[in-house]
Length: 373
Image 1 (cartoon, one colour):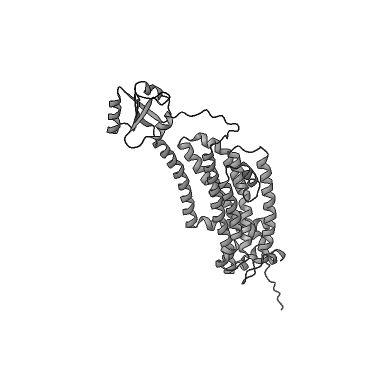
Image 2: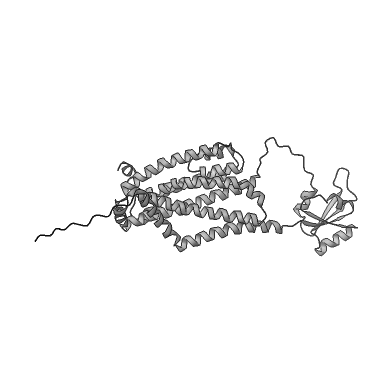
């Protein structure tokens, strides 16, 4: 009697979409379970909330300067900003209030004032309050030919805020992608992974998973900032910042995909964790240089316009221009199109480098060889 046996059928590979989803889910799950990720996220959110609430409390605590004024001088100071006037009958009474600490300074008439000189003098214990001196100063009429719709100091703060958020997220999550790639090569886990999913699915899953985590963290920070502004009564700033913040999220979602692909492809060139910093340094500079240019030249409209179209700086440059109201309605769409097209090209090149270098261990793979295959 003869028997026949057949080998078990090989399990079919999952589709490309399922493979990408599987890898992305693994990346997200492993990061969310990490205590360092959770702690850093909480610290960032608390830092944003603390900064907004703290600045509001500090500005609120800087109340009006209490001033004693004699006779008609008190009426002249009624409309002065930042000054709370207490009217007294005589100069001696005003000086007594200053010595007792009841008021910060006093404004009294100057009896022997020369023609053309000020008819009042400020009496203070140690230093004259700057708010009072400014209120008494005669400011010239100012006529601006091209007035800026936004205060320059506020413009710098918004530029700094957008820049530091993008820079921190790109370096943090990009570095995590790079370390993950090298760790899998160093431990040879990647050889097992490639038997289940193709290399392009492995790269796409890493990029999508990291991008989703980074974007989720940015959205959480944005929500925390918006709630803090609302609770502190800064609704006007929130209204002005809203459109720029929405565009920042859109540009960030596309721009981080570009950077994550570059971090992953660069890391695939080496097999040791000690070499990660060297290979990702060029990508790090591509993030740092635009960040510093936008921070230092936030008041230079020409430089800011150029940087809003450069793919590596557009996620910060264009939202800043939107906040400063220095843009036409079509410019964000054009800049986003350029960024998206660049991202497609970089992802294709990164996928080639990643695929050609992933199974090569030992010495660092030359860039030209990784691109050729």
